[in-house]
Length: 129
Image (cartoon, rainbow, N blue to C red):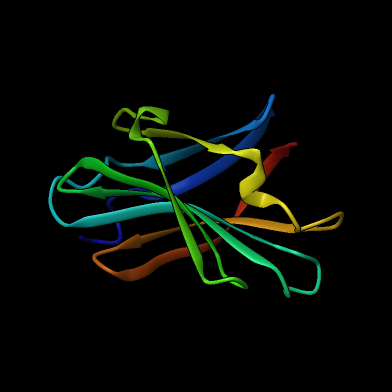
């Protein structure tokens, strides 16, 4: 994958009842070959609690939607029915509880990975939680 493919332009999250709706806007298209992941990294102000919410693609098709609780080492998988995508927009639904424990003043940024390597990190996230 070249650095011109699937550049993450912006991300946003909003709470809807007990769900977080995450939207990722990319410049380019989801790669038709290889692995591609978009996600959110959330942390408490001192980074002692960290969560990752991810949507993973393989050869252009969504194959996984999950969260990872770094301090507990626990991954939780979610139904792919909460994921949709077009060429330039990826959306995913996660339970609001996936960000529990981050508290006030938390930090949230977006990232992408391509073929197992970090592609982008620290992309700002517009929040409406």
